[in-house]
Image 1 (cartoon, rainbow, N blue to C red):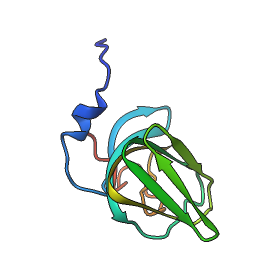
Image 2 (cartoon, rainbow, N blue to C red; image 1 turned 135 degrees about the horizontal axis):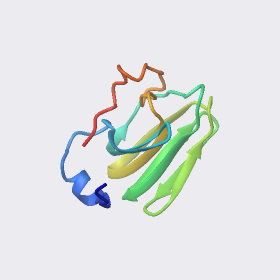
Image 3 (tube, one colour; image 1 turned 90 degrees about the vertical axis):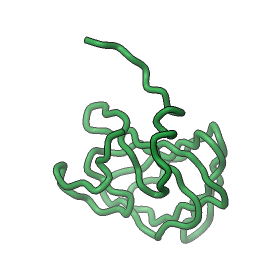
Length: 121
C-alpha cells in the first residue's frame, strides 16, 4: 500500500469553478469535499444529515431563517439536519464539507451512482 498525505492547496489549485464540490477522500460512508464559494447560494436543507463547513481560507456566512453565523478561516460549523440555510461569501472562500456519500449541495439525495457532486480530484 502507498501512503501519501493529501495536499489541500494542491487540490484547490486543480479547479476554479465555484459552488461545485470536489471529493478528495472518503471515510466509511462520509466524503470530504473541497469547494470554492463566492456570492450567494440557494436556500436549502438536508433532511437526513447534518452538514459540516470547515473554512480553510477566507470567511463565509450562513443565513438561517432566524439568524446568521460567520465562519472565519480556521473555524468550523455544523448545520443540523432539517435546518434551512443559505451559505454565502462576499469574497472567494475555500471550504471543506464533510457529509455522507450521495448528498448533493442543494439538499437533494441522489443514489451513489448518480450523485452530482461525486467529482474526484
